[in-house]
Image 1 (cartoon, rainbow over the protein chains, first blue to last red):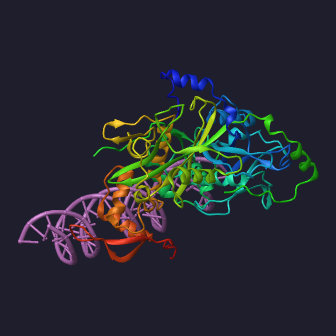
Image 2 (cartoon, rainbow over the protein chains, first blue to last red):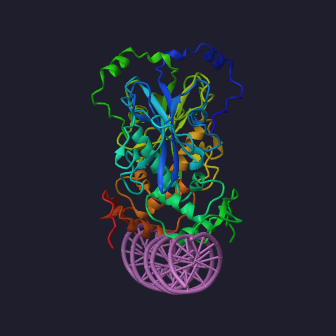
Image 3 (cartoon, chains in turn brown, cyan, red, green):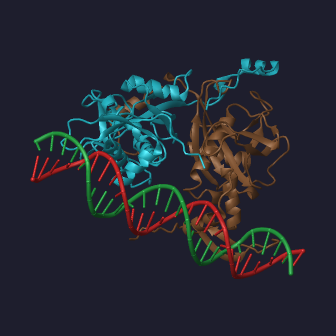
Length: 257
Length: 257
DNA sequence: AAAATAGTGTCTATGAGACACTATAGT
DNA sequence: ACTATAGTGTCTCATAGACACTATTTT
């Protein structure tokens, strides 16, 4: 999806037009990029939040974000924010939705293009600074793919105050991930390199917020061809250790009659 | 999904900050809204295109679109475009994706928030003006939900030259509609008030670009509870007339043990 | 009567859930 | 030996496709 189709020759008339074009003739707005960094640990779905130091909404918790630069693309801006505010590179990142209600930011008109990223919890370790950066548990008030705002809390029963319309953005992220979970291998993005089927199932359960059938989960995932067994097993359990799996890049297809 | 949470009292300090805030301190961009108006007729998926009269890309075919006003929301802007450029109100409209590659428009930096609308073909009758406004047949080079740019043509084998990255936007619209078709009642949006099961199936087949099983389509749709039979039948056929159905607003649920 | 599609009943293949059973680690 | 989970085999149920058959309209 790139629009780079403009290397071809343009007519003289068009070139003259472009040179005399005055961009200030149109209304211009601020465009921001906000990123929902999601992870799953201990049966919970969590997101990275940053405490705002400046007005407006100073003191409230916000998604990591930033304004678009004039020369960068949207995905590029989202990756810049991710690297700058969370030190993350090479993670799953996808555009989510664009929020543009006139009153969503009291300063001026800001259109925000929201992204979401999926990260294994290990990659977020050490990132938390109490009172500044937090990995907050998401509280989803609707089942399935209902939709609507989603809250965040650091300890049970103590919801964080979210800035702007960021509860709506969190809601859109949860909805998207829940919907995508059973036809795209996004559960794998939330786990380390090697993992057991049990860990993968717990991630799915954390995202969907409902228990899954153990047996059919196993069969379905093994049949998908997305998992490659290593010959290793987990260690340090107080029961029979499970086999460790890896994400198999090449999805096994079954297009044969 | 609105961000209107700002009626609450703000502190004096914050109020003073807002009054002294200078919006021009940030880079500002142009934000546009483009709408893919989709319809299905004669087994084909079609989109409304407008011939550009001005540079850049004068003479090429583009999606109906316009720049965002400073006071309106995104959905609002999309509905304004839809009413102004196609005379359509009260149709299904949903945000699609936001395109923001730096080089997508040669004038200046324009971020475009794309929407798609679904309309019954009757509502687009009389809208076409040869050479100016066209309902073009979409040529989708990928099966299923593959993704990628999509072309448009008025007659077979004569593709239209599309402006900017609008082939990518068409591709995103087709992908979305195909993906949503079997879990959301969007096929109904492409049909008039009353329709036969055959017409509905032909719409689905046009969207998916593959034949569907007649029997299971019938059973699945009837079981969905989305269709309400009228006691009327179609007229003027050269065979047995089929019953006419209507969209049943209240989806019949089956949440009982 | 012929043609063409509407609509029904039934069989089969597939996939998920339920459940029983065996296997293997730590304690 | 006991406990807890891994992993396998089998049964059932729901759903989609295939297919045969009947029904009803126009020409």
